[in-house]
Length: 286
Length: 335
Image 1 (cartoon, rainbow over the protein chains, first blue to last red):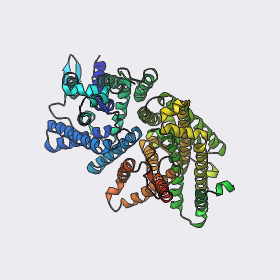
Image 2 (tube, each protein chain N blue to C red):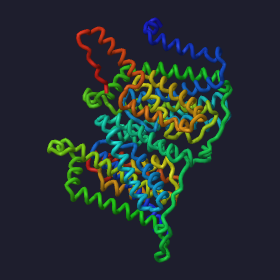
Image 3 (cartoon, rainbow over the protein chains, first blue to last red):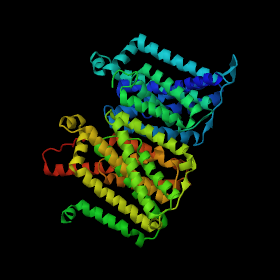
Image 4 (tube, each protein chain N blue to C red):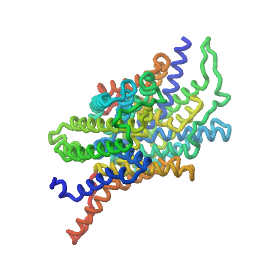
């Protein structure tokens, strides 16, 4: 029982981190038809800048805010300078965002050095609770809580506000939205910015969770996020959270019982989804 | 023969190949030989990548997996069995079969979907192979990799240099024929307009799979040569870096030209060599890849046809200007 609960919590926490990365990816894809291969780079930049600010100021909260702001800033620059010039050309987009990913992760090594950096948990989030003989690590609960809060907030914005309505309509048919006199370019930028901020937040939260951060972690998580986006259905926000939890849980359970097959299991899941339901488990359009 | 010689470009290629073939006997430099061998090996890899990216318009981010399959197959065969020619040839055959099967399956799974899926899935599949190479310790010795001995005829550096050169030339000629064949024309038609090609009655998926298999097998062969040149193989052959190398070479040299891939391989390998030397002068050169990342982004944005493509365009537009003196029209880009 002890193991089971811990594995579930672990899986949920990892799932939430993947969700923070995949949600932006899937929204950006749904709205702009852009698959941002540099998203993992934004994730890693969030981690490095956040941990750096956290160590400099001593405040974890300031670190988180700093990470989100860094992510958003990079997101705006990416959208303006990198994606806009090649808008509408898929091959060029894929190529250019991968190039950006390369530059972003190399820049990390230039600024902070090629070695991995250790990240500590703030004192009020370290340690654990003991509930009925089961040890629950505080920080994991914290990640799950933050992930859920972000999910609910974005879901609220998408479902209940005017801007959310525009985004949802844009995912369905952006020409129509444009012809109704809404400047979809501004919506694109907003969504890109928020997606980048979420990715950066995910990266920052990962730091104390895994203990160390390194420049290649962006790519590692990006692969998981791609798997999630495919399983959840491209462009489906609620699909991405379900798929992220699924991938997180399967990763943590497999890592415990059959450690060598952890990634293979997720890949297999993705392959099966692609064969039988290429639009994703929760997606509406293919 | 006269037909081949009638083209000025072919004469130029022949002369360069002949020059490179006699080079080791005229100029004796071990490090240059090794560097040039690397250029030839990566040129094969980049040309195989060009078939996908440049001729069919498919973006793959997992090209390293075919390269790695080739490298590991030859390594394992040479380590497990005797380093003899017969086993080496067997390893080549096994590589061809394996890469063909893997590229066929990956292609079948993903090529019917949008281009994003192929890029993403090949990335994930390559990651899977990397994990496999790390975990299957009894065969791959994990992260550390292993050294192995090579058959007699591959031991001499000069001989190996000539073999690499010959492989590059053969692959170049074969792919030139391949891309000019009716099949190659269909691939280019898919690149230009997939829907129209389909409506003309071509089964686009089949053609794309053929392109991915051809490309995968050739990348496997490049992997074999690479492993033999180092006499060592480790998990680095499966990493993203290999794919990125192929990508940079093809894009900077010029997509859809084959020669561009070779030129790109030369540029990247030589600058890699020189920039790592420069690292002693200033540490920023240790991160040499960043320059290429930036150049790559600029090329994709402003010169999507690369060096060779841009030169061709320049030549073409000048010719057009000469023949039509009334009005010079800018040539519209193919993409």
